[in-house]
Image (tube, rainbow, N blue to C red; front, side, top):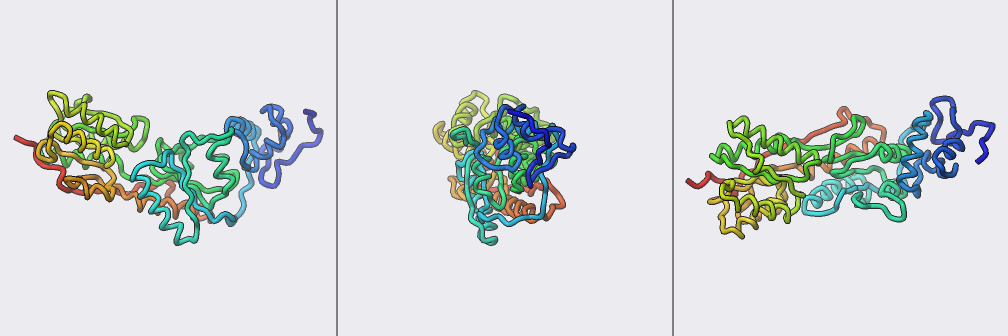
Length: 353
C-alpha cells in the first residue's frame, strides 16, 4: 500500500487529536487490513471481525484518533435492545417485563439478543447491535471489553450494564442491587432462628453478584460468632440442576447443614428436590432461603422465604437511564444499587431439637 503524501481526514465522524500523526492508510498498513476496513471501524459500522476491530481500535487510540460527539440524534430503528449473556430461566422474564414497560411508554420495540457464544461468520453480537442501531442497549450480567465499548460509542449507541458480571469501568453506567446486604440478611435470618450449620449454594465464583452474596453470608456468620465452614460454601451455575446436585452432596454428609441459603430462587428449587429425594421435610428438617423473589417462589411447596431483588424495577431504571443517555441527559450517578428486602414465608423455621 502506497503511503499518501497528504494526510487523510478521519471522516466526518472522527478526527486525530494528535494532529494526524498517522494517516488511515498507514494505520491500515500497520493492522494488515484495507483502508476501507479502518474507515468502517472508525465510523462504527458493522461487518468487521471482532479480532480485527480490536486491533484497529487499539491503533486508532494509539495515534490519537477520537470520534466527534454531536447532539443526540434520533434512532431510526425505534428499538430498545436487551443483551443477555444467556437468555435462560424465569429470572430473565422479570427483566424483560421491566424493560418492556418502559419501551411501551416510549413507543419503542424491545429486541432480545444473547452475547454468549454469539459469533457467526466472524461477526460478534456487537456487529448485530450496530446494524440494528437501537435507541439504547441494556447488557444483563455481562462485561464489556474496551473494544466493545469503543465500538458502541463510535456510533453514539448508549449502553447500560444491569447486574454487571464484574466490576464495571468507572465510565460505564450500571444498575445493580445490594447483593452483599441481601446475603447478610438471608444468613442473619437463619442465625436468629437458631441455625448454626448453614450451607450456601451461589453462582459462579467469577460473577460479581455471586461473590457479594457469599461475602454477606460470611459477614453474617462472623457477626453472629459462628465460624464459617468452607465445606458448606459451594458455587453453582444459578440453575436448578446445580442446586439439586450440590444440595444432594451437602445433605448427604454425616454432619449435614440444617439450613441452606441458595444464591437464587431457581437453585432453591433444586434444593427442594434434593430434600425430597432424601426424605427431608421443609422446614421441619431443613430451612431454605432463596434470592430474587420470582413469582413462582410464593407457589413452591412450602412457599419460599427469599431475598427480594427488584428485577422489574432494576430493568425499568436501566431502560430509563439508557434512553436519557441517548438524549444527552447525564445522570447524577453512573452506578446505582436498588435495595433488597427479606420476604419471610414458610420454608424457614427453628432447627429440630
